[in-house]
Image 1: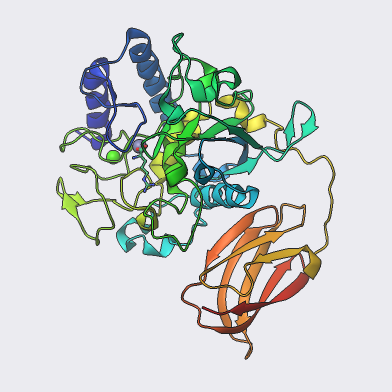
Image 2: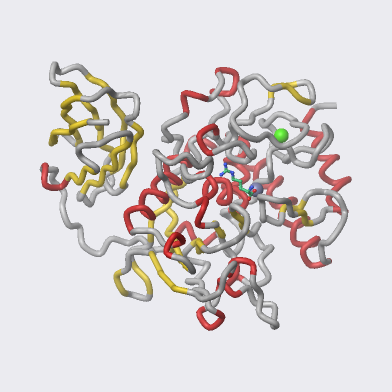
Length: 416
Ligand code: ARG
Ligand code: ZN
Ligand code: CA
């Protein structure tokens, strides 16, 4: 019997006893096949969703290469209780750009993917943008609410509404979930949580929840969770991905064909190879539990599941949302004034923001004073990006941007 058939049968044997699980650092209610806690409605939902997903994948498996990039508007609700829970606009932009980088296989650590997994790593071809339009008005896609409630992320009103999702309950109300992915940042007591497609009690509580301790991209922090990957992981759940180990043991995995069967979750930053269930663990997958710096990939199989999820309500209409519409094309030529580079002098990371409102890819390169190329990468004009430069030594450099035949450069000083 081939593997695909086997998986299909496993799937249908176990679907009737799917349940909801929660564990210490993952708040996401992952249906985990153990047979407790799921109400009839949710059970039905998840079965329908899996049927749909498997059919969608079977139908689309040969079309993987002809897709267009999907750009999805997001709104970030910062529901802060202590000042430490608040974030600057730039920090929020950097987090959303890091999320896009992970989904576009443009993350800084793709080279850490072991050779045997390299060919499985996927450009998911989904990008995320902070909303620019809301109810016909310009916005930066960020809502800030101060709340007096500690641990608001896990508080529910007596009518069962989740407080963080409503203005009148001390939180911040969802923007239309058909047009925006709602990302709530507030005290959760765990790193993050997300709703699976169709599993939220109401669409106004559909979205992603991130604890302030695990939000943002801060390349010089000592925390294990601040390279933005809790959001990447939760976005995986939001698009119907399960944890890579499925449930503990070597019989049921994540319903993805190209991820290896894995016994238990991984943690910390293991060295490859780690073997379980007779194969190397893909502990560097975004859907494992390793530290942010060691997570590096989604697989092509996970990509298919996510694209299938994007054909379900209320995810489907996200693809055609104009929440990131650009009303005015501001600037199409590149000049040094359009380059925001900080900090400069820099120590271990630089943030780059180009005030250039086109969607063309831009080559970026750092040269030393002798004209030797030290670093190069591709970015998109509309993205703010953070680059780790900790292994470039002190000195004066020139950072070049080249797009569509135009070049602009700036001096960069590295001084640790
Ligand atoms: N455990 C959390 C969850 O499953 C998130 C884990 C994120 N891991 C990380 N390195 N950021 O929802
Ligand atoms: Zn998770
Ligand atoms: Ca698998």
